[in-house]
Image (cartoon, rainbow, N blue to C red; front, side):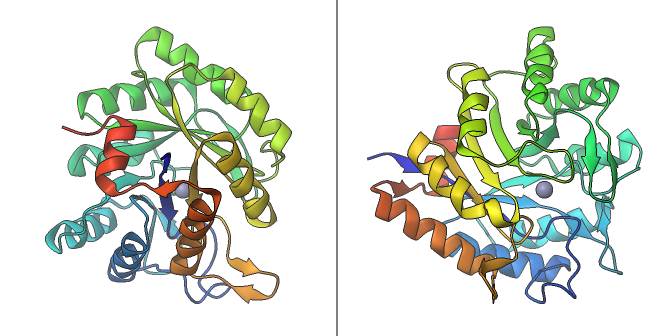
Length: 273
Ligand code: ZN
């Protein structure tokens, strides 16, 4: 039976806790939510950090504290650390934590575009450095694609050898102001562009969450859910990370697939040692 991986995006960099009281923001809160979503079926943890005022931060100390709690308390999950948790910081600041902590995966945002709160910048120079950094530290890139041309950018770097294939793709639909709209048709078109042998995940931000979740299941992809992407379970009903992961697991089973265990996710993603 087909296995479907659930990635849990617990926090993100943008939504304030005032808008979503269930949002985990401290290392301890993030670790506690991580344990609960892993128990509910998530095998990949996509992590962002917040500073003491609750703003998105690339401070390596926050990543270190959180990852140490997870490792010391034996949480078995694939760690996927963001390299894009704060706008306007140096290239080096975006890579410091992955060089130190060596997660199994980290994000690689393959292009620049307008976010809601500024320019989300990923220059070719940065992407070349990031790809090289991931190869040197044995970290699998999750290529985040917010628009069609970003697929081409990643493929260009694969050809150059600074991104190692096969990669895992993550289609982030309806992102910010200028991301590709979250429609089944657009997702199908993106899938036509990725190399054979790729694995992939897709999700829609906000209202697009459920339509893309169902489309992704039908197309054989993997799911990502969490408060980073969607803070409402349904109209007027606030979500929690656990409720979103439980629903994703339920949808996978109802569809006729099985929720991938952490060991199975490692096999599918080519991370098994
Ligand atoms: Zn993220």
